[in-house]
Image (cartoon, rainbow, N blue to C red):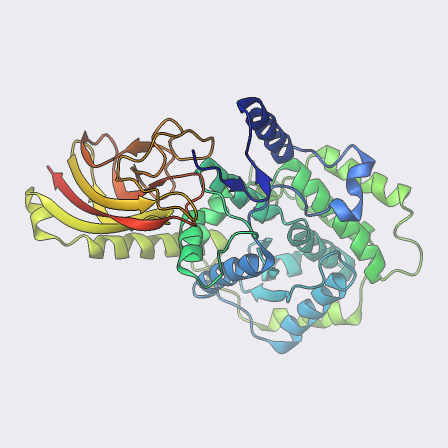
Length: 449
């Protein structure tokens, strides 16, 4: 059996040791930072399950930002953007992650919202600035988003997603941000739409972002009470069951409000002399008032931008599916190469329910590092916790339908399968960690309707 590593945790030895390691990982994933004051030690912030190096985080954030910026209407007024960036960098300057090149964007939408992408890409909506009544209120929201970056909360959520998909990546592995393998990781992590769909900050993430924001606001010279006041005011605007966009993604239960108040009191934050507002804040709002707001029904909100990106993805997928034989109900034939170090490879083949999928594969994969041991598509006997199909042979050819599907099936050297789901066919290697595999499988795919 080939032994692989998950990040820096080595799964070796007896099954008991493996189970202990698995339990430790589960505890790591579900650790709760608030309620135990020792958890708020600065050296523990940002720790936990995370498969991404800082360079990979930046590359991922840059990719997501590029996708979004093509759909959102960004404000380019230097007075407005300069003020928001100055405020953001002032908070970053006293944060626990000062080594990132943070970027700040102002979006021309009336939606009251703000969000952060991996790598320090911070977005602030026009509607949020117009809803705040003081500089300290706006600083509180920006500080909260910076707190999510400092705590690496989105990276932890994505790492859980990759773990559930049977994929393990880490800074210690040879996966460069510009390499083909890194492209596969980004593909599995998903586009910006998949990112937000999977981005469900836990209550602990929100509490930690609150704690970081209040602490940093005080150090940066802003009154932290502004953050509490704005969040409570925003929650009070809920009418008829309508939830402001910011609260729909950043829920504010009563317990969090009590925590913020208690933190300010216990740490003696918000002492006299801290700025509640400034002339810069007034100028920013005045400049916003002179800019045209998006017309009704054409407001490019985050949800609208994500929907537009999804529509483009689906359209491009439809354009690829132009095979005349497929439309006429005849057989579709496709040949694909699956390298041994692949995660999941998009075959370009779409299947629908009741299609008959027939696959024939040949070739060999050297599945053990620094060894001439090889296997065909049926793999070699072996067990492991982190393979897509733990009961299937190591380095066997496996498949799934849909990029984010967790329903895997064994393909092997020959497979005939009546499909019960619809979507794109992906093929991969059943291995704990594929990155040092050599060789390849040549695959011939037939789909009959």
